[in-house]
Length: 52
Length: 286
Ligand code: SF4
Ligand code: SF4
Image (cartoon, rainbow over all chains, first blue to last red; front, side, top):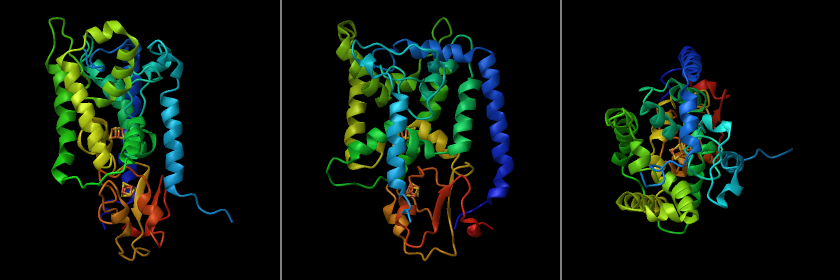
């Protein structure tokens, strides 16, 4: 049975990924990426609907 | 004693709730408007087109391409961070439990027809789509202002055509007049997806979805995971038979194709298959 790593062994990887995720989200938010997402999402995206 | 609620029931309930939360603005269908509130700066965990009138959040794949292809940025820390967080916490449980387009595909698969197996080679297509259409093209092919287009949305995404395109075109004559070859291509892909899903369980998820490809990469380390207790497993193979994603949970509990649906756990006669954030199947683990 394929259990290459036990749950404890995965903890540091999970923690590192979660910390990186938090840092990325905060940094991206701070430099205004969420505004770009919002701007794209509140207007009809012509590419999404097959016209762009 | 209250009988244990089956994963099939719990999952269907959560899928319906997630579908409703992702698409709460149903009144927007009348008049073909979009929701324009602040919540749309946040991404839905599953695939759900932000040009759907009812959508309350941004689509993560659309958002990733939009930021990567924008004039200001070439890499989105924000969306990558969100995908990393969803991936580490849930892996492809997002697909099995939260994705609106996943639920739609399961409903389509209920249409009576012969059900077919998928050749293994098709499973790799979604990784090529992720790299070429989502990561490379929006950054590499830009206009004179340095802006790239969301190539996956533009050429492939059937969720956009179904949830956004058809409803918005029905509501706006001006949009209908702009229909051309690109729309016909996307309609053909939507049709292929629907027919594929009738015959093959979650055809789009398994062959084309770049978001499923991303979350699948986390299945080996995600907090929500699947374990098989080797002391309880009698090797009957019922779990493998029950898996519609064609995974053998005994051999590959961390398979990138497993959407953590729990069908294997429901059918296991000895209760050897466990799913959860922390499971009681620790004995299999060395
Ligand atoms: S593979 Fe894609 S469409 Fe399928 S459930 Fe996952 S995110 Fe949704
Ligand atoms: S291995 Fe089990 S949980 Fe995973 S997709 Fe198959 S039946 Fe669902």
